[in-house]
Each structure stands twice: as C-alpha cells, then as structure tokens.
Length: 279
Image (cartoon, rainbow, N blue to C red; front, side):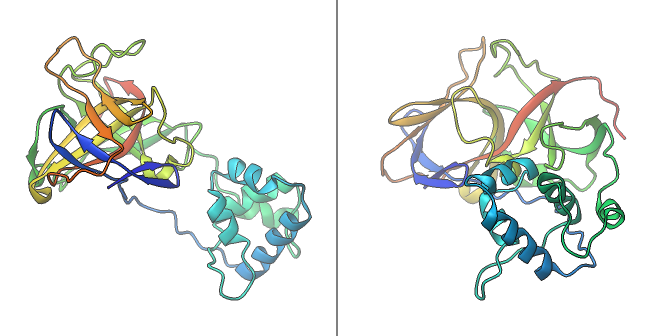
C-alpha cells in the first residue's frame, strides 16, 4: 500500500472506523501534448547538457521550476550518454528553456526560436465534467461512463496552464463548512489532475483534494472532496461539514491487512464556481 508525496512513495494503510484498505497514488492518465519538432533532438540535448554543466549549482532545479518539468524530466531531456533514458523536448518546452538561459541553441536564430514558441494561450479552457463528488455514495463503475460528457469553459489556471483540468459536480454537504471557502451542493469543482501537479503539491496540511475510493474489486466507486491533515503516525482526509454523519478517511502508517478497498488522490482543488455554460 502506498501514499504519494510528490515523487516519493512510502508504505501506509487506510482505515475508516475499523476496516483497513489501500491508499495508492493514481495514474490518472490524461491527454498529452506530443508535438514533435522537426529538429535534431540529440543536438538539443547536447546543448541543454552543456548549459547545465557550466551553470551554477541549483540551476537544474530552477530550470525545472521555470518550465514546470520535474528534475527527472530535465535529466532525460539533457541525457547524452549511451544507455541513459532520454525524452524529446517539446516545442513549448524548448521556448521556455531558451527564455530561461536567454540563449538559443546553436543553429537557431531568433526567427526560428519565435517559430517554435506556442501561440498565446487563451484566458479560458474547455474542460470535461468527469462526474460527481458525493461523499458516502458508492456507485457501480458503469455509472462513471463518459460516452457523452458535458463540457464547460473555465478560466485557465495561471500557475499550471498545461495541467489537465478536471471538473466535478458537487453533490451533498460534506464540505459546506470548509473554513474560508465553503463548498455548496450544486457547485462545480475546478481541479487539476494530481499526476500533472504532484511535484508541486506534495501532501500537506490544508490541501483540498478529490479522493477516489473503490470497493469490490473496483466495481463500486466513490469520489469525494476532502481536506488533508498530516500527523506523525497517520494521514487524514477530512470532510468539513455541519453534517456530523460525514467521517474522515484515516490512513495509518502500519502494515495491517487491508479489506480490498483502494483510496486514491486523483485531483487537487483549485477553485469552486457555479453558473458556467456548457459548450
């Protein structure tokens, strides 16, 4: 059993009242921007590797922060030794790297760098309403089928413009007393896929997340919004409600047997909105 802290994984156990079950980091696969540039990727990797080799200590981390990539991804786009795992540099990433170093790769002039820069992003993005968050409501997995998904236009996240946006219809009162930001039933939760931002959002006190639980071998599923509390011996996912029937999910750091229920963090809450028009 695992609980995810960014890129670090540690063993943990889940329980609600007496049962225990598995908490593991979800691989919530999303659409990736696989735009390939008609350039020599090896030459680009050589250039990035050279810049990092001669740069002050800590430059790799600053480059990762500037581009939104992980340190591991930076290592892969700058890997030049035989046998090393490599990753192609995407067009918008190269533009960000060029801006970071204030220098274009050999063979590129200013006009060429301008050509690979992405168009100015729109202030809004169209996202899919993937389902409902309803604490305590386990439903058959088939009920989550998205054959005809509803789409909404929402503001683009300025901090994470390339992260996948997930929208959830809020059902119920499990978060109607969240301090400072009560979440009413009927609202729309605008979230980011956790796998896209996990390196920026390690589990910490106060983080508001969408938690997925599955039972009966994955045949029954529940999505709910919870607030994280970190303790020395456990992690708790709390409702914030005036309704006392809602209980926290408690994850103990022990090694008890589980009951087959899985608990997964699938998204980080960014804002609550209402009144958006479907598109």
